Amino acid sequence: MKIRMMVYGLLILGLVALIVYRVSENKEATAFVGGKEKGPLPISGMIVKPEKFENRLSLSGSLEANELVDIRSEVSGVVREIYFREGSRVSEGQVLFKVDDIELTAQLSKAETAKKLAAENERRAKLLLEKQGISQEEYDMASADYESASAEAELISAQRYKTSVRAPFSGTIGLRNISKGTYVTPSTTVARLVNTDQLKLTFSIPEKYVSRMKVNSEFTFTTTDTGRSFTARVYAIEPEVDVTTRTLKMRAVADNSEGQLYPGMFVNVKFPLEVVPDALMVPSEALIPIQNGKEVFVVRKGKAQAVQVETGARTSSDVRVLSGLQPGDTILTYGIMALENGAAVDVVLDH
Image 1 (cartoon, rainbow, N blue to C red):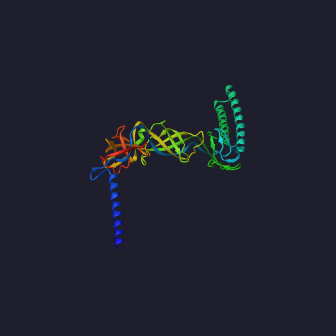
Image 2 (cartoon, helix red, strand yellow; image 1 turned 180 degrees about the vertical axis):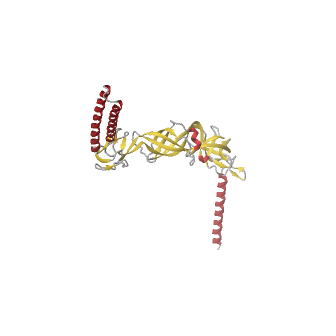
Image 3 (cartoon, rainbow, N blue to C red; image 1 turned 60 degrees about the horizontal axis):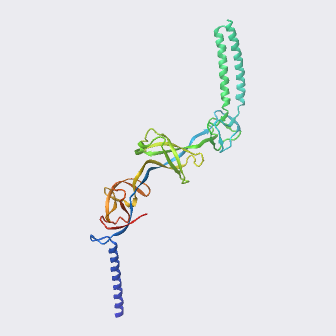
């Protein structure tokens, strides 16, 4: 019985000793206990230095072909020849396919014959008019017949010319939807021709940045499938703000001579708003939200002092301070949420 009591007593004494030790350690690690300073508190900090800051607007946009058209025939008929290969480059004016023109060729031959006859009649009528062998009215009728025959021949010739469908601009032609022998009409889409040497980039900016937008402004963008950065230049701005979204649409052009970009791709735009050569940037974790704004802890004479600051633009990790700090100030960056104003601190500078 006595041995059991002794064991219990030893256990209780050990527990009390452990509690006393832990309380003592906590007191040493605390800067204040009951308002009395116990020693400097080790804490991380950094010296604020001016640095270059580029304020950029992050937006999303999409790429479009510089030129795009559906290739169609202006006349109806059977396709006799196809002169392009799917997915190949074609040049402006190159014949892509040929529609049968046998009937038009025959009509043109008939019209040319009628034109020659009308021309001869007009020539004879002119000679007779000079000899007063016919009246002016009879000559005018012969001349009108010649003009009508010429116009008919030109009309048929133009229709015959349209049977050879040509590329309206240089570019890459896509997959064809016809074969040799297919009957096509003006509503038949034969293929799609796209010019991707340059690409258009369309995006919209919030209304509050409208006054900063200018034609010929350059910016960078990235695609979702690669981390590479590309450059584009603004060449057109919509003349009015969209009243529904309160945004302004802009269009830029980007070089694609290497062929790494494709129409329809989604891109991330980084549009520069301003460049500040001497901005004061602080880590976002150094800011403490308060009722009227934000504050940071600045080290003054070995003690932490809360200073209210005005902030501006931010990056993914830092925030620009517009007022409240001076170059060379030492701010506290880590473990500040439980810190009291006026606490003694031992600053360990971040590198």
